[in-house]
Length: 125
Image (cartoon, rainbow, N blue to C red; front, top):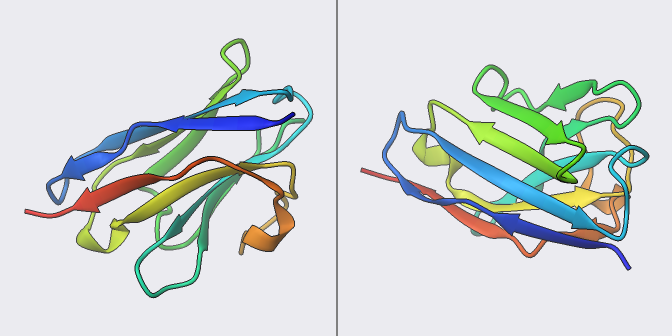
């Protein structure tokens, strides 16, 4: 059984940084892509970034490109999302997801079938 457990998140001032973690069990990250999504109140779930298992290639939504970095630690079965230069519009619940395609943007939530529990990120002064 696939389980994704998220950690990190919280409240940060504009311009600050946060790191989200997504620890996987029941699957090996050597074979499955992992993506990060976010959902703000009243908005659809948006694909933020994904990372491929085979070559580590990554994709980012235009809204976060240059500010967010996705990475993975195989031994720890963990994928990270480092978020820098945070803006109030980055405020949302962030989810990690696995077992889906990571080939281009946009990254579609409907393509992924295993999800973390979500974590709140609030960017506010």
